[in-house]
Length: 225
Image (cartoon, rainbow, N blue to C red):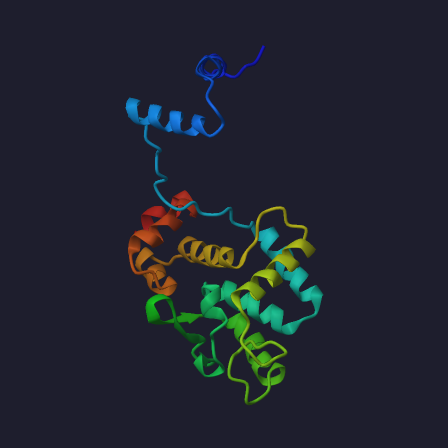
C-alpha cells in the first residue's frame, strides 16, 4: 500500500477523468478551473534563494586547483572577483587605468551605470601588481583580455570557474556570482556594517543587502545593523 497521503484524492480524480472521458488536453483546463473555483492560488516565493556558500576548506581547494592549473591570468581574475565582490559583468570590463595599486581600489561601473570603488587586500596587492607589470602588454586596455585582444565574456568566465571547481572535486554548485556572495558574507562576518556592505556591493536598496544576513553567523547580527 502506498504511503502517499494524496493517494485517495488521486483515485477519485482518476475516476472522474474516466467517467467524463477527459482527453489529455482537457485535464489541465479542468484542473485550472477547479483551482479557481475553490480559491487556490500559487504561493509566491518571498525572495530569491541564496546559494550554499563554500566552506573555508572548499574555497582553499578551489584556489589551489587554480594555482595548480598554472594560468596566472585565471588566478588573478578569479581571486580579484572574490576579493572585491564584483559582479562578473563588472570584472570583465575593468580597465588597467581603473586600478589604483597604492590605495588598493578599483573604479567600477555597475548596474545602471552607477559608479563605485571596490577594494582588495594588502596580501593580494603584490600579486596584482606583479601581474600588471609582467603578465600584460603595456598598451593593453582591459585588465583581462583573450588571445584575440578582446575583453572576456561573462560566459567565458563561467566556464573557467566550472573547470576549476571540477578540478577541485567540489560537490556544491560553483559559479561566478557565488564568489560575490562569499565575500559580502565574509565582510559582514568580520566587522563591516550593513550600510558599508551595501556601498561595497553597489546595491540600490539595503533590503537587497539584508538577504546576506541569513548567511551570517548569528552572534554578529546585532553588530552589523
